[in-house]
Length: 472
Image (cartoon, rainbow, N blue to C red; front, side, top):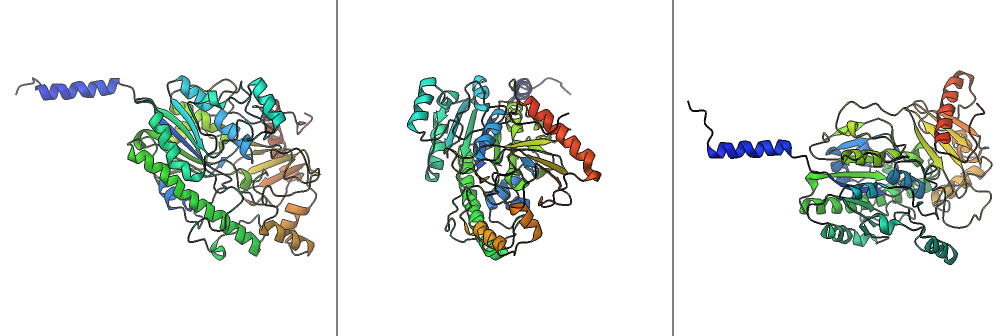
C-alpha cells in the first residue's frame, strides 16, 4: 500500500498543523449589569419569577451562588468591578466623585492589548454625576478630572432603555474588523422607583416568597411584586442584547458576564452590609470554555471581575489590584476558593449631607464574610436605620406602623429599631437572614477575633480611613 499523501490529504494536514500553531483569537467580552438586583431573584436560582431568558442563559454557562459586591451601593460597587480593587483603595467613597485619573480600569488595560472598548446605556456612575452643579463642574473641568472620554473608544453616557439595541449596534458597527471588543452595558431595572406596570402580566404578590429578613405585610408583598416585574422586564432587554450577538455571528467567541451591581433597595438590602445588599446574581457564558449547566458556591468578590476577565484575555492584572482571578473555576479546573470577601458601606447620594440622623444617606461600616460567618463593623452606630431609596414606599411605611403598634416580631424589631451595635456576628448556616447577632458570645470568641483580624488586614492594606476594629 502506498504511503504517499494525496494533494487533498497534504492540504488538510497543512491546515491542521497551522491551526495548532495559531493561537486562539482573544475573546470578546460583554459585561452586563442589572441595577439593584439581589440574589436569588432569578428563576435560575429557584425563585418564582418570570426570567426565562436569563434562566436559559444560566444553563448555557456557569451560575455563581456566592458572588458579593464590594459595596452595597452603585458607585463604590462599580468601582471595584471595573478596577479590581476596593472602593476604599480607589478613593471612591463619595457618589459625586469621578474615578481618580491614576486608577487604571479594565477597558484601559484591554485597549492597550488591541481591544476596541465601550460603555453604553444607563449611567455607569464612575465619571461623577451626570449634571454636576456649577461649582463642581468648574473644578472638574479645570483639573481635567472627568476622564472616561479618554479611557474608552466608545462612550454613551446615559441612553434610555429604548436605545439598547441601537447603541450596541452602533458600537459594533464602529468596531474595526478583526479587533476583539469589550463592551459594558448598564441596565436601569430593577432600580427604584419601581413601576406599577413594568410587564403586561404582573406577578401575583400572594405567590412571591417574602425573604425572611422582611416582615409579612401586604405593602412588602406589593413592593416585591413591582420589583420582580422590573426584573422580568429587564430579562427581555437582556435577550435583545444576546440576539445581536447571534445575528452577527459573535456569540461563539464572546464571554458574556451578567451581574447585579448591588442588592435590592429593600430594608436589610441596598445600603446595608447584610447579604441582600451584597449577594448578587452572577452568570457567565463562554461557549467551548465553560461547561454548560455548571454552578459554583465559591466566594466571589466584585473585586475579582476585572482580574478574571484580564486573565481570560491573557493580560496580567495591574499593580494595586486586590481582586483575584477565578478563571480556573470557570474552566472547571482546580481552584482555591477565597477564604473571605470584604465589603464597605460609604456615603450615599450626590446631594450635600442633609439628615444627621438617618443611615440611608450617611453610614460608615465594613464587613468580612466567610462561607459560614459574617462580621459587620459599624462605625456610625448611632445613626437611625432607614432603607435606601424606598423609605416612602408601602413596605417600609407599613413596617413603621407595625413598629409603632408593637406588632413586629422580636427579630424584625431588633433588626430595624433596636440600638445598633458596633459589631455584629452572624452564623449564616443557622441564621441566613442575619437576624440574631452573636457578637460577644464566649463560645464564638475565636471566630469573632479571626474575622476582626482578617478585616483589620484588609483595612490596613487598603489604607482605610476608618478606625481599625481591634487595638492589636
